[in-house]
Image (cartoon, rainbow, N blue to C red; front, side, top):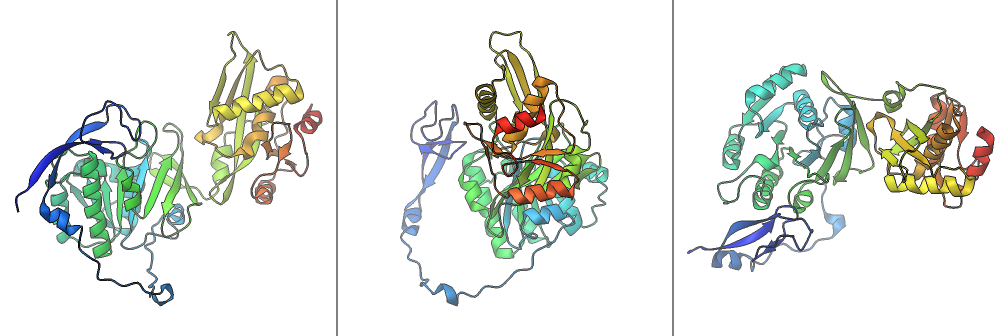
Length: 434
């Protein structure tokens, strides 16, 4: 069959295709992301679309389900995020910022259960050095330094094991396509082949993926739809805390998170996360308040710090580290309007200790109290916890699973709980602490 070829321009961010080049992708709005790609078409490809399925519908109640035994790793936190372990034949995508610890985490996992580690970024000697630093002898690990998909598939035929690690999908390319490694077509095709291998052989595959500067998973969005589980490892690069989140999981809930601490020997799982986030706290200092947030289904106590100083600028600065900037502006406006605090001439800096990033509104009250404490130079009692969302009228609103948060705070020895059940408005809290 004679093949016909033509060129098309493909966006490297979203996979949008167009016959002509644009400086800005019409689909996702990314500049200079359209790359010329050669496509092959044939009459055979069009006829394949007209093949009719021979399968017939059946009742859902008649479908037989066989419960598969999950593969347990030595990391309880990782198994928790995966829904109880790694499902045979599943495909998992792990993403995160450069240097955050993705390869380190998976080297720990494969070191405990054994498998094939395919490295497209490092040589076998480099992986060996990292394994030695982590205390992994590697007797149950097979290492393959390869960037060709065909070479990897050939190695699959000669290897049998528990799990396959691909580090990373952006470095793998196939000879069947003309694009370079990391292109949309290459990522999509290589991922399809890896998914087919995992499903046909019943061997789980874990793929490491790069992220863009905006924090999104690099490559076409269809990559996330092709895999069974999408994990995201986050944390500040120069902080010790690491949080493993589930963005998608076909075999479990997406609410669970895993907490780890990075040290010179690799990642260590943390069973009591509140200890790592509060261990360096200085007590009875103005500007420090403890709150309880929910990471997945577990409550975690963290410290909110605030610093207010007289501004030397015409427009005072508002700096938020680990907290939403717009939310901070809103809270400052509430403090000025409802409590009459003259914050218009002060620089306000808010920091979430431990490198965490807070997205839920349960920390509103703690942020507000830390600003009040710093501005008035009045320390909040070290055994006090503040939980609640602030409304524009200055009222304290209840948050999800508030009883569970309070119970966790009391379990760790905190005696004073400031929440919606004890104080209905911010003005009442202000009167009580001044």
